[in-house]
Image (tube, rainbow, N blue to C red; front, side):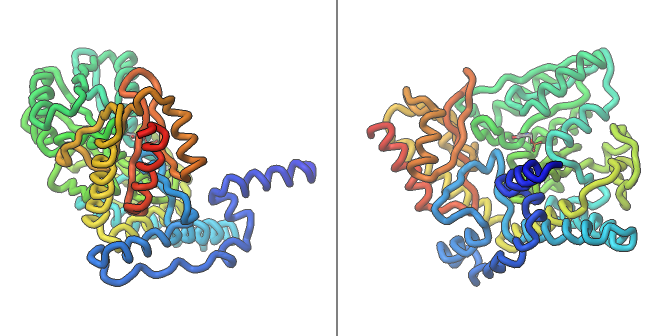
Length: 426
Ligand SMILES: Cc1ncc(COP(=O)(O)O)c(C=O)c1O
């Protein structure tokens, strides 16, 4: 590496601002002020508490990021844990120092199990939801004559994945169409009940859709699957860390999630829950070393060398959410969304894709911004108003998607609404 390439390389790392960049600058941790304490009294203390929550994040105070459905920031405790643990391994990669990391990984599994209200024996630590979903579609023994029933609104990792594997293994995929606006929970229970036949082996759907934020009847569909003797894969990418998910109650066979979305964890870490009753029907897709120490992870989680620092930081994210209060997080995100929906309903020319009914949506809101170009609008809102949202292209319910989380505030939602009103000339 020439000196100039080396300088460029490090400049890029700093610009990226990821864990590598933090590590490249050993002064980072020393310069960073310690995370301030959460205000006492919890959510019942109102905005003072939520302000102290916001201070746990390093996003500049003037930047409002409402894109949780895509990527959430790690909080300071999470980023600091990641830096500390990464540095520890790089300063001392000896077997002696690394030996302490195995119990740390098992501790993360335990915390994940508590968080989802299941047992550590049923938890696999993966890289993300995509990997978790694919471990299921790769691992079930499906063949010609078998059917898998999927919802059309699934993410590609839970839709394309099934369609491509069907070509290879000979099973068929039956698709339950999505309806807009949300036709209600009963509609989907009925639609899946009709789609399941004697040949069906699996149903697969998304707890909260990433497209327009439709909440699906998770418990009823998993119960239906059990009654009909088929497996259920519940994609939790948009519910894990947002809803106070209780898998003990919902009872899916499989549930998937990512740390870097609503849990505000480290990037490239995720979870796959495999219900005890389904474990002997799911083949591992990867055989290597460093399996987990308990339950199904002993057989299924031999994924080779991993980054334990990320797993420890993931645990810190779950602990942080528990400290803030999981029910409070769900309530806060819902309240901000209600404020947003109310404001949007007063703006002219919008075509809403998300249900106004709080029983059918949570905190993912999509709409077509009249005749405005969605990409230009998102850029203007980012540059003029310092509000970050995202766009949805294509022909299917295209436009703008906004997903507020517990680090956002009512003032930020108002700022977004004011920016939208200005651009729509309301
Ligand atoms: C519903 C759903 N499933 C799966 C994924 C994939 O998540 P990841 O990229 O973390 O694997 C996403 C990402 O947005 C999603 O929204």
